[in-house]
Length: 373
Ligand code: F6P
Image (cartoon, rainbow, N blue to C red):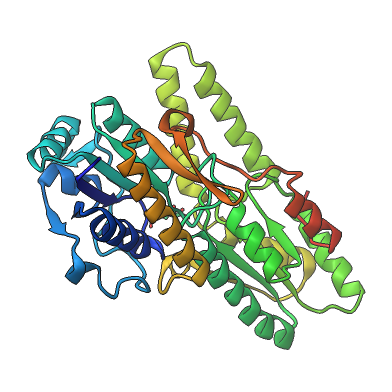
């Protein structure tokens, strides 16, 4: 049975990370006498060998704290900025693992972390991962730590913005996070009763959105709330991205692939804040005063919801069981009412997107939500 365990949190922070660290730490120590330590700031802490004991003292009282007591980063083991160079630091991580006589490393993170964990598995380490991200885009799992809280925060924002929208007869566009996936916008938009929900998986035509708003005005509804995912795109932009993605996929030389890749990156960088333009376009097309609220990192902050605390505790304690069974190279996925270990090979490099005919999309359409298509 695994006795010496290391934990890292990696990728963007979110509510519920501390609850999962607590569950692994307390569950491992109290029930099985494991020795549990945490490495600081994601994979970088393993390279620098910076760790802390996760004992009764450090784990006490953290269930309700947002963020992560371990700190986090978006560093990758095989491409880490060291001084002014980018280096493969996998060997340094392997050395740290052995120096601490670890039997297993638990990585709590999103899609990128799953990929990095597989690299470490392939380098010979015993790895178990838990899915966390407010984007909910990790494949094979129904949900991820942090998603429920982010949905609640974004929903509350939509609720509050209704007051100003109705009082001033305005269009209010609310930009929510989610990276390239629309889960957060779809759920917060549905929960908040948004009139328009724009998600990356359903490219929109701004004229259609304006038409839906004008239709509402004709019916006497003098305000509209548009929940737009940060990754939502007009049909034209989506076509550009698709063409570049095809160019990259079919590239026969490294030079052409690199150029497509650079163009894609430049496109996505320029797309940040696209809702500013969208808001102006809607004002122009409808003649109705419009305002934009970008929720940003508010969605990742503060106290985890009850559901996230329960999920993190469930996943964390299930992780302890997985460690006692010495079942490695897996991510613990929530599937229905069960948690199942799935091989990292099946998770790595993939993402879970909203299918355009997802039941929740259909249900939102039935209550007259416009998706701009
Ligand atoms: O992955 C979580 C997330 O909050 C995304 O929704 C967002 O696109 C990204 O992280 C923002 O990253 P950062 O905090 O590094 O700016």
